[in-house]
Image (cartoon, rainbow, N blue to C red):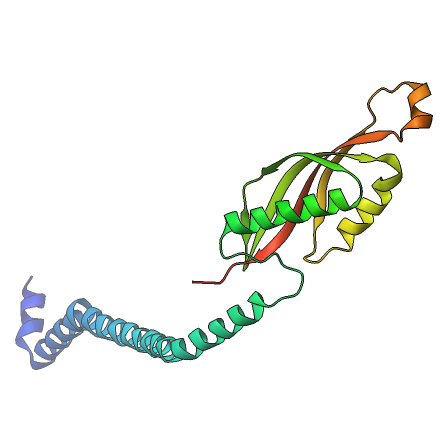
Length: 192
Protein backbone atom coordinates (compact mmCIF):
# COMPACT_ATOMS: atom_id res chain seq x y z
CA UNK A 1 0.00 0.00 0.00
CA UNK A 2 2.86 2.31 0.63
CA UNK A 3 4.05 2.02 -2.95
CA UNK A 4 0.68 3.16 -4.22
CA UNK A 5 0.59 6.13 -1.90
CA UNK A 6 4.13 6.99 -2.86
CA UNK A 7 3.14 6.78 -6.49
CA UNK A 8 0.30 9.27 -6.01
CA UNK A 9 2.51 11.57 -4.04
CA UNK A 10 4.88 11.97 -6.91
CA UNK A 11 4.20 14.44 -9.61
CA UNK A 12 4.01 11.80 -12.37
CA UNK A 13 1.46 9.82 -10.43
CA UNK A 14 -0.74 12.85 -9.94
CA UNK A 15 -0.59 13.65 -13.65
CA UNK A 16 -1.29 10.07 -14.56
CA UNK A 17 -4.29 9.89 -12.22
CA UNK A 18 -5.54 13.21 -13.50
CA UNK A 19 -5.12 12.02 -17.12
CA UNK A 20 -7.02 8.79 -16.37
CA UNK A 21 -9.79 10.81 -14.74
CA UNK A 22 -10.06 13.08 -17.77
CA UNK A 23 -10.16 10.11 -20.13
CA UNK A 24 -12.84 8.42 -18.00
CA UNK A 25 -14.85 11.68 -17.89
CA UNK A 26 -14.54 12.01 -21.68
CA UNK A 27 -15.65 8.42 -22.26
CA UNK A 28 -18.52 8.45 -19.79
CA UNK A 29 -19.89 11.98 -20.17
CA UNK A 30 -18.54 13.83 -23.21
CA UNK A 31 -18.67 11.03 -25.86
CA UNK A 32 -22.42 10.32 -25.41
CA UNK A 33 -23.21 14.06 -25.48
CA UNK A 34 -21.22 14.53 -28.69
CA UNK A 35 -22.90 11.47 -30.23
CA UNK A 36 -26.36 12.83 -29.28
CA UNK A 37 -25.63 16.18 -30.92
CA UNK A 38 -24.36 14.44 -34.07
CA UNK A 39 -27.54 12.34 -34.23
CA UNK A 40 -29.66 15.48 -33.81
CA UNK A 41 -27.81 17.15 -36.69
CA UNK A 42 -28.57 14.12 -38.89
CA UNK A 43 -32.25 14.21 -37.89
CA UNK A 44 -32.40 17.95 -38.60
CA UNK A 45 -30.91 17.41 -42.07
CA UNK A 46 -33.45 14.65 -42.83
CA UNK A 47 -36.33 16.82 -41.65
CA UNK A 48 -35.14 19.77 -43.73
CA UNK A 49 -35.05 17.52 -46.82
CA UNK A 50 -38.60 16.30 -46.05
CA UNK A 51 -39.76 19.87 -45.55
CA UNK A 52 -38.29 20.81 -48.93
CA UNK A 53 -40.08 17.95 -50.69
CA UNK A 54 -43.37 18.84 -48.95
CA UNK A 55 -43.02 22.46 -50.06
CA UNK A 56 -42.34 21.30 -53.64
CA UNK A 57 -45.49 19.13 -53.56
CA UNK A 58 -47.55 22.02 -52.22
CA UNK A 59 -46.18 24.32 -54.92
CA UNK A 60 -47.09 21.76 -57.62
CA UNK A 61 -50.71 21.37 -56.42
CA UNK A 62 -52.27 24.15 -58.57
CA UNK A 63 -50.63 22.79 -61.73
CA UNK A 64 -51.79 19.27 -60.88
CA UNK A 65 -55.35 20.50 -60.32
CA UNK A 66 -55.29 22.15 -63.74
CA UNK A 67 -54.01 18.95 -65.36
CA UNK A 68 -56.69 16.89 -63.58
CA UNK A 69 -59.43 19.23 -64.76
CA UNK A 70 -58.15 18.95 -68.34
CA UNK A 71 -58.04 15.15 -68.10
CA UNK A 72 -61.61 15.14 -66.79
CA UNK A 73 -62.71 17.26 -69.77
CA UNK A 74 -60.92 14.91 -72.16
CA UNK A 75 -62.31 11.81 -70.42
CA UNK A 76 -65.87 13.09 -70.68
CA UNK A 77 -65.50 13.30 -74.46
CA UNK A 78 -63.97 9.85 -74.98
CA UNK A 79 -65.86 8.24 -77.87
CA UNK A 80 -67.68 5.05 -77.06
CA UNK A 81 -68.63 5.70 -73.44
CA UNK A 82 -72.17 5.78 -72.10
CA UNK A 83 -73.34 9.27 -71.31
CA UNK A 84 -75.14 10.13 -68.12
CA UNK A 85 -74.58 12.48 -65.24
CA UNK A 86 -75.37 9.74 -62.72
CA UNK A 87 -75.13 5.98 -62.60
CA UNK A 88 -78.93 5.66 -62.71
CA UNK A 89 -79.18 7.80 -65.84
CA UNK A 90 -76.42 5.80 -67.54
CA UNK A 91 -78.20 2.53 -66.64
CA UNK A 92 -81.47 3.86 -68.05
CA UNK A 93 -79.72 4.89 -71.27
CA UNK A 94 -78.13 1.43 -71.57
CA UNK A 95 -81.54 -0.21 -71.08
CA UNK A 96 -83.06 1.97 -73.82
CA UNK A 97 -80.23 1.16 -76.21
CA UNK A 98 -80.60 -2.58 -75.66
CA UNK A 99 -84.36 -2.33 -76.16
CA UNK A 100 -83.84 -0.44 -79.43
CA UNK A 101 -81.34 -3.04 -80.68
CA UNK A 102 -83.61 -5.97 -79.78
CA UNK A 103 -86.71 -4.44 -81.36
CA UNK A 104 -84.77 -3.48 -84.52
CA UNK A 105 -84.00 -7.20 -84.90
CA UNK A 106 -87.63 -8.29 -84.49
CA UNK A 107 -87.09 -9.39 -80.92
CA UNK A 108 -88.97 -8.76 -77.72
CA UNK A 109 -87.34 -7.50 -74.54
CA UNK A 110 -89.08 -9.26 -71.65
CA UNK A 111 -87.15 -7.80 -68.71
CA UNK A 112 -84.08 -5.75 -67.88
CA UNK A 113 -82.37 -5.53 -64.52
CA UNK A 114 -79.64 -3.02 -63.67
CA UNK A 115 -76.57 -4.51 -62.04
CA UNK A 116 -74.33 -2.79 -59.49
CA UNK A 117 -71.93 -0.29 -61.03
CA UNK A 118 -68.21 -0.80 -60.45
CA UNK A 119 -65.71 2.07 -60.44
CA UNK A 120 -62.18 1.52 -61.74
CA UNK A 121 -59.88 4.41 -62.40
CA UNK A 122 -61.85 7.20 -64.04
CA UNK A 123 -64.48 4.84 -65.44
CA UNK A 124 -67.59 3.20 -64.07
CA UNK A 125 -68.80 -0.10 -65.48
CA UNK A 126 -72.54 0.10 -66.16
CA UNK A 127 -74.17 -3.32 -66.62
CA UNK A 128 -77.67 -4.71 -67.13
CA UNK A 129 -79.03 -8.22 -67.37
CA UNK A 130 -81.63 -8.62 -70.11
CA UNK A 131 -84.10 -11.43 -70.89
CA UNK A 132 -85.33 -11.36 -74.47
CA UNK A 133 -86.59 -13.46 -77.30
CA UNK A 134 -85.38 -13.11 -80.87
CA UNK A 135 -86.04 -15.07 -84.08
CA UNK A 136 -83.28 -17.57 -84.79
CA UNK A 137 -82.57 -15.91 -88.14
CA UNK A 138 -81.98 -12.51 -86.44
CA UNK A 139 -79.63 -13.63 -83.62
CA UNK A 140 -76.50 -13.09 -85.73
CA UNK A 141 -77.66 -9.61 -86.79
CA UNK A 142 -78.48 -8.72 -83.17
CA UNK A 143 -75.06 -9.88 -81.96
CA UNK A 144 -73.37 -7.87 -84.73
CA UNK A 145 -75.45 -4.77 -83.97
CA UNK A 146 -74.45 -5.02 -80.32
CA UNK A 147 -70.75 -5.44 -81.10
CA UNK A 148 -70.73 -2.53 -83.59
CA UNK A 149 -72.78 -0.24 -81.35
CA UNK A 150 -71.60 3.11 -80.04
CA UNK A 151 -71.27 3.59 -77.15
CA UNK A 152 -69.31 0.37 -77.00
CA UNK A 153 -71.23 -2.48 -75.42
CA UNK A 154 -69.85 -5.83 -74.28
CA UNK A 155 -71.59 -9.13 -73.51
CA UNK A 156 -70.29 -10.59 -70.26
CA UNK A 157 -72.51 -13.65 -70.04
CA UNK A 158 -75.00 -15.15 -72.45
CA UNK A 159 -77.42 -18.02 -72.21
CA UNK A 160 -79.34 -18.95 -75.37
CA UNK A 161 -81.98 -21.65 -75.50
CA UNK A 162 -84.70 -22.73 -77.86
CA UNK A 163 -88.01 -23.60 -76.25
CA UNK A 164 -89.54 -26.90 -77.30
CA UNK A 165 -91.57 -26.40 -80.42
CA UNK A 166 -94.00 -28.23 -82.59
CA UNK A 167 -92.31 -29.28 -85.84
CA UNK A 168 -95.43 -28.42 -87.82
CA UNK A 169 -95.37 -24.80 -86.56
CA UNK A 170 -91.68 -24.28 -87.37
CA UNK A 171 -92.45 -24.13 -91.06
CA UNK A 172 -95.25 -21.63 -90.50
CA UNK A 173 -93.53 -19.46 -87.84
CA UNK A 174 -89.85 -18.88 -87.37
CA UNK A 175 -88.46 -20.42 -84.19
CA UNK A 176 -87.79 -17.93 -81.38
CA UNK A 177 -84.74 -18.17 -79.12
CA UNK A 178 -84.76 -17.22 -75.44
CA UNK A 179 -81.69 -15.15 -74.63
CA UNK A 180 -80.43 -13.98 -71.26
CA UNK A 181 -77.31 -11.88 -71.32
CA UNK A 182 -75.43 -9.42 -69.23
CA UNK A 183 -74.30 -6.40 -71.24
CA UNK A 184 -71.99 -3.69 -69.97
CA UNK A 185 -70.53 -0.41 -71.13
CA UNK A 186 -68.36 2.24 -69.56
CA UNK A 187 -69.19 5.70 -68.23
CA UNK A 188 -66.58 8.36 -67.51
CA UNK A 189 -66.66 9.49 -63.88
CA UNK A 190 -64.92 12.80 -63.23
CA UNK A 191 -62.30 12.69 -60.50
CA UNK A 192 -63.18 14.81 -57.48
